Image (cartoon, rainbow, N blue to C red; front, side, top):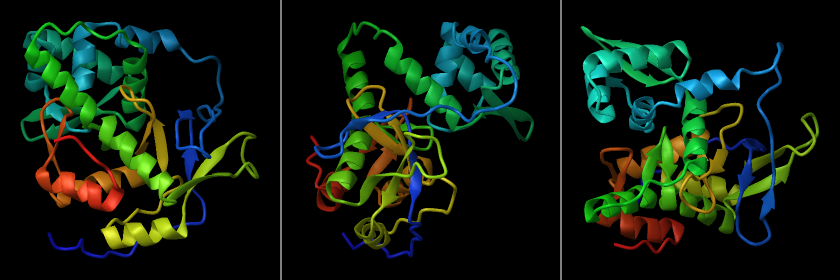
Length: 273
């Protein structure tokens, strides 16, 4: 396979917000927390969001949109196993409640998660929710594939996502640094190291400039965190461009033979076939 095309990548001195809890290799493991931005107003109405995610059909719709796609009402009704009229009612509640947005698509309307914060909410709920019983070989195989590699909104999650982040930290491409000056005490940032910038450039990844290009959050099925934000999005796009992963139904990613060799060569990952 030909070497990846080289594209310049800008690497700011400090990027990323080290939020929530992360498991990283020896020498880096630590627990770091941060909260949402402080805003004016009274207490948050958690019950309103709780009511929206208390229905099985609405949860199935949110899960179907978890890979960042926009889907029509008919497709979401099928995913949720409900009638068109019932789906319309659920989608109206999710939209009014701020969890979904509507995108016109000709004569129909598509629905999409309102933003990465909603995807984060889904991941947190998945970590807290009890697992459903597996009653067939097909369900077992589907669950295994979902845990192995999947799309979480716009980045790689599951075992593959956790191992990619772990490899980048182990190889010195990313490092956590304390940037408490000018921020809340205990706030940490990730920096792309000089070696990391060289690696990303040679790998053909461009990280668009943004306030916090490198983010992460704990994975919902594996022990560890996966990359999100601008870096996570750019890596998924590159993996797809190289043909290393193929999108499947229900957020799943298929790792191709080229991907098995490529992840081993570029990240040192030994992935099961």
